[in-house]
Image (cartoon, rainbow, N blue to C red; front, side, top):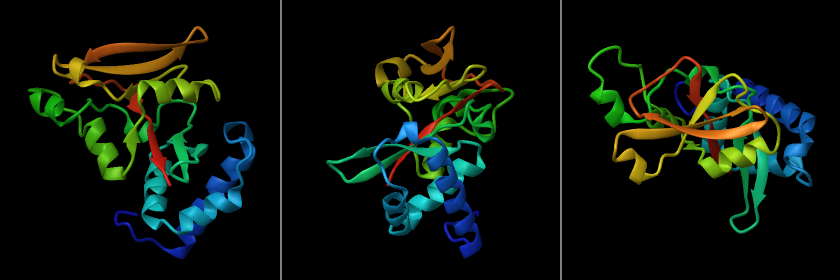
Length: 186
């Protein structure tokens, strides 16, 4: 699906995948009903396209909450490790353009924008870790505050020794084991 249009078969396949994951991981969304989630998705097909992008890049998106104030379901990437299709990327466009040699193909913020999703914050990443154990072998870039980014840095998180860690690195760095996780509100 390169455009935001796709076949009824592709759409049905995505619904089946999301429903199956939803039902297998009820601990992530206690008290929520798949029928309501699907109805919301059917009314917001642009969001369904973003979920497809999350899925095909290895994110395994799932519902992790419901915001009563905005009446939105909240999806996070719930793959065990940082999504494979979103690794080996530096933090943002500025970092990408600053590299003289061995530039990665893309940046985290550009990819997230293209997909129509938001990069997880450190707080959201820590909330995700309460729902399971993620990034035991990989790490994930998270939203970096301006006061860190202005010095050329960016932050990422992972889980080691049954503890969630937050670290820093140059925003222009990229690694095969570091990607990013996103969120989507529907």
